[in-house]
Length: 106
Length: 153
Image (cartoon, rainbow over all chains, first blue to last red; front, side, top):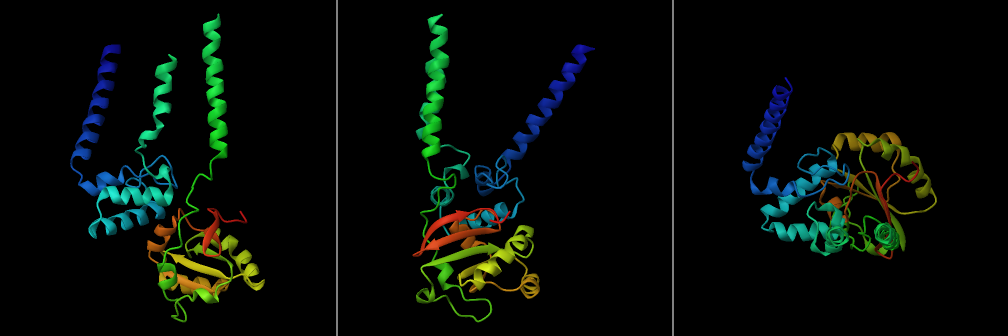
């Protein structure tokens, strides 16, 4: 019975992973980008997932800029200069001490 | 024995240094240096259709983002009225709001604003707005202080 249970669990995890992979594969570039921008109202969420007025507005503004010909890198830089670095889920490279220290210590 | 002591002590030292550096850093949203967007001065007032004349402004004034759908805005509204009666110039920016609701809200609760702009979100974006209500204190056309939350709450 225990084995059956664990098989069930594995199956559910498998389905979940499959589902997220499929939904990630089918998105266009802009909505892919939204997932890297943090919603500052509900900080665990990206603006893609969030429905706050802040996230909706940011999506609109980014879309407007993107359609007027700015590329995503420029938009990203502008966002960081306005909102600070915590707006992006991708950390910049100058945190190497943070990532390297545990390896050095242990 | 020695070795088991080194790691925690080193850890504590690093924690201490990082705390010190973090506390000395500027505010979390370190966007006080951003300039006021030109669209703030180019957009016409909702009522008298005039654009803002920078010479009319005092050295110190307030930019307040509000919306009729926002409860904390209503809570801080009496304070804005009081500030206005004491002679403070307040620029009101109506953030992503329905026009009828906005007019009704102003009629119902009074108008403390020296200049009112209705914004679809682009001014808010350029000024780094996170949510309404948000108030910027401006001295000599530079943002001096930003309060993200309603300041009476």
